[in-house]
Image 1 (cartoon, rainbow, N blue to C red):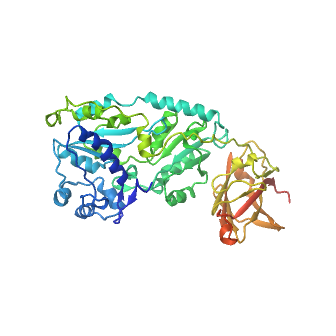
Image 2: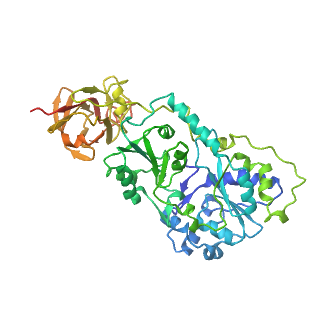
Image 3: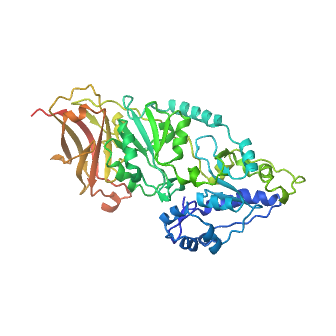
Length: 508
């Protein structure tokens, strides 16, 4: 993804690959139609727009926070002073993910605009683009080629059938009510609200309210997010929140999933195609009508054919551009294939043909010892933070490892104390700092023998009577790699090796 997103020397976001895509995808076709095309982009990418000088003119710091504020700023004076764009009624501007401030500026100059992005509905057989415009003629043409909702409804049905044959139809356990929070990348125009970049912690109260409605709030981190510290810090305050790494479309198919929430992720819109309630915590500036020009259309979903000469001819032959063109005698190029965008972006969003189904789980019974060797059904209890299981058990991976334990609400826990016993081994100097049970930190006692140890944590039985799921978090210190300790090729980070687990009534 480095080619699609990077941060410039002054800390501002840059998307050079998206700019090059627009130039090639639309520019080449427009040139073939005999139109004059020019590229305008930032100096940091080799263009002519002095973004740093414009930021100074706006009295904004050259940083991500300044970039967010610039999204709703008045650009007129700054652009006139630092870099006049020379656009007017005979200009059509095609841009990628344009902020509200630039959309307003273009509209005020009387120019037409096409704001382009990859459509957030990414589970259909092929990728689509979404486009919005301020030009009425282009708007009518986009409406004619707008992709039917049936394409996505049919794709959702196909995915449901796919996962129905490959695993369970519920998340964690059928008796649980589950919510899903979809994470996003750290820097995204979809996260800018009132000129500020919003983090999960900024919406902590809203997310906590969502978590209170369900037995467990599963959290799917964005695969391209490089820093999830803020999200992790928020999760640590929610005792029933749990990171999960299942295929997100498989999760959409779970019958016990009540809602999908996010700050403002496209996953919310996708979930609604599967009949799941979608919730957003913010309205980003880019989607706020009061921040956009009054002439701005809604987003239209279109196929790759929009970049072919046949469609470009229709788009530019609108009342605002007719006096520039004489296209009647020119040949009509063939339309693009349906998979064109998949090839261009080199990525296949949506259903992965190798995606596993949802795992099935079972209820923990008092007094039963459960082993965690390879192929054991108990492995479905393991949350994030574990390596692949081996013949004897499973090693932890990193400083935090989690276990999900479904409980039967009618099970008799009594009124006294319960004891959770984890049997396992430590790697070299590793140790367990603490064990958190449903958000409560406990310091385990240890009983050592041979190369194994039993870790005991006593629990008030009354706490589990009200729960149908217990989340056990093991906090591990001084995990090491065998490659560092013994010079082996094994670079896994090993801390605690879990062999078995027992929940029993304390009798002494």
